[in-house]
Image (cartoon, rainbow, N blue to C red; front, side):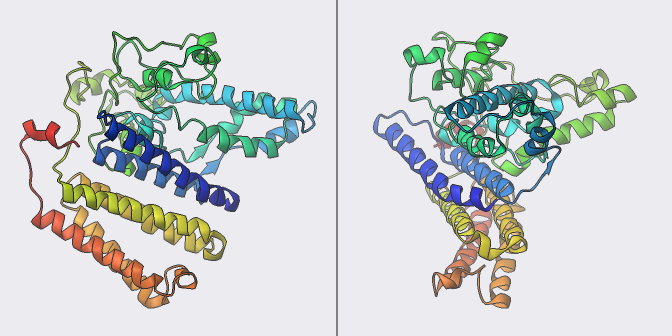
Length: 426
């Protein structure tokens, strides 16, 4: 986990730089694809995911080294061939994992966060799950285990394979000629994120597009069918922690409400979106029917509030970079506490972005606990060793968030008419 944390010290700034480049490009060509609230929500989702992964929060059903030990019928030496085989195996497994996430009700919950944005940009790429607490991916690597691909090779390639899926979440790159027949491109992935009937559940590949072409899930982006983004049952919140468990909560409610015991069991394994007939009639859900004319989610905002949301995001990102830099010194128990402060903070400011009145109490509570922690320990997880005035800086941050919560809840909360929503989305 410490190695992964060190890798994030380089990956996070790299992703942020690419985001800034995309935003700047959109500004200069007058074709901006980012909305402040949506992008802050998306990046915040990515931060929750890397906290979960870096702390190893979750249960792995079976590890790849275990499969390798009992299934390998040969052993491949560490040459260029083993890296190529491992890459193909990971990409093949990724395709089928992606298929499960789109086709099975239970697994859709761990993927819906990635599709929840009604925009499509690099911030959307960072919408990664925290609800995938049961790790089953090694099962899909059985072919690699049988061939004896070393676990060290898989461990190195897996994060690289994941990070390589970042770049194609953009609308600023058109079709790429012959590459469209080899790799997943921005054009293909725009199709994947679209809710148009022509595009639903298509282009499930992650790096190579050959799997989609072989298994019948490929769809070219059509000029006459402009992609519309989001999910058919809109999240209607900026809070990534809520989005992560919305679908699971709906499944729980449907399983509880249905009168048929068989439906209580099979709902979890039925195709995505399936609901028992009696529940569907009694508890109907709003589903987008006209993908070109639906009301996109928006909340009251202003330049000042946009600035506050960006400030919270940057402060949270900086805090995480410090956590990863000081990972071993903080210790596991300290990391859990640190991670809890960050999670609560993200829950608080994204709830404030939703204009939820309870958000102020989350902000005040976290600020109080944070300043009390510094008062009792005399430090903020060892920051004073790097900055003598570091704890004071953190105290100022907590005080700022408390004041910000009060100001934007009780003073600058200005609900707007629904017909003005589109004007304020930027």
